Amino acid sequence: MEYTGDMEKAMQSSHGVGYETYMTKHDVRMEVEMRREEDYKKEQQLLQELDPQLHNKL
Image 1 (cartoon, rainbow, N blue to C red):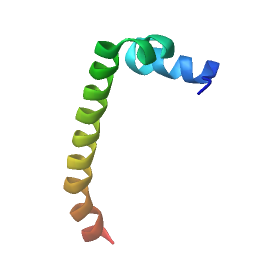
Image 2 (cartoon, rainbow, N blue to C red; image 1 turned 180 degrees about the horizontal axis):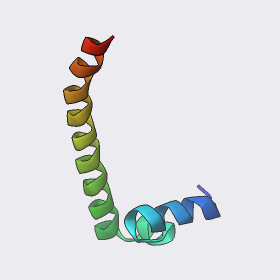
Image 3 (cartoon, rainbow, N blue to C red; image 1 turned 45 degrees about the horizontal axis):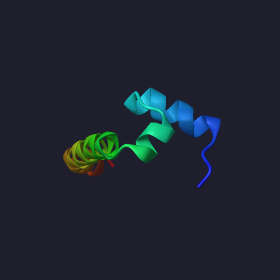
Image 4 (cartoon, rainbow, N blue to C red; image 1 turned 90 degrees about the vertical axis):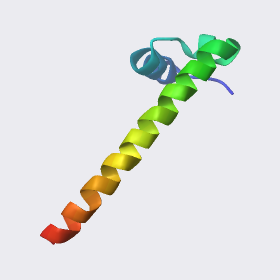
């Protein structure tokens, strides 16, 4: 897969590493993916907390 300059900027901005480093270094990739998983779980928990509140206001 070819990566674009936008992909590079996003990786640098979000995770502090370049896309090429992410793709070639297993330890870096695992750390990024662990943070993504943690962020996803926090987001899901927040949505579960907000969902009943939103339905009550409708």
